[in-house]
Amino acid sequence: GENVEQHPSTLSVQEGDSAVIKCTYSDSASNYFPWYKQELGKRPQLIIDIRSNVGEKKDQRIAVTLNKTAKHFSLHITETQPEDSAVYFCAASNNNNDMRFGAGTRLTVKP
Amino acid sequence: NAGVTQTPKFRILKIGQSMTLQCAQDMNHNYMYWYRQDPGMGLKLIYYSVGAGITDKGEVPNGYNVSRSTTEDFPLRLELAAPSQTSVYFCASSFQGAENTIYFGEGSWLTVV
Image (cartoon, rainbow over all chains, first blue to last red):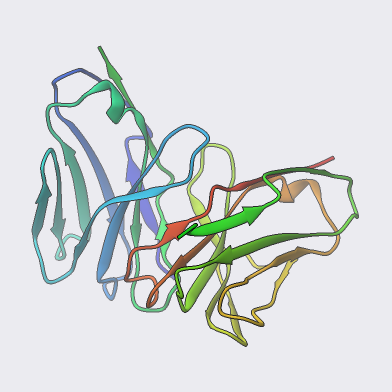
């Protein structure tokens, strides 16, 4: 089955700096890659997603890039703010309804 | 819409006890899922359902059972609770499979002692 690895496990940045989180996946058939944000004690919520026919997608300060050849995708957050502090999860799905999640990255944005 | 509603939010079980986590969604989603999240880890799929009357195993189904008698409800049953089942459980739903936005419930914190 699909295996998703996520790095780094923790990331600390200064407010205003950029943050990058990277994920790799193993199943070349995977074609949908969402990113979820989970605040402490809360439910995961979708922040951005990308499909395999697109190389990059941007939504305000958040962008995701996908390299299908290398089987990796990344989340980029620019101009970070304290409210961006949370755990971020990447995931991959290949049409079989079994979405696999990475282990998560705890992002801390220091004011 | 209330979205995905889970109950109970917190529960302590003794080893060997049984319980059911309830989940309901009012978005008319066909697909529903149960995930578990261990401390500091990602979410692992326990079971999923593509519609009423249909269920299938995910990555970690052992020790659990599900049923889907209606589109709205997808309860998760723990028959003989074990300490390894201490986790946070999230129910979720989507309109048409895992390639669409998955909406999560608020989570159920379960401790088995």
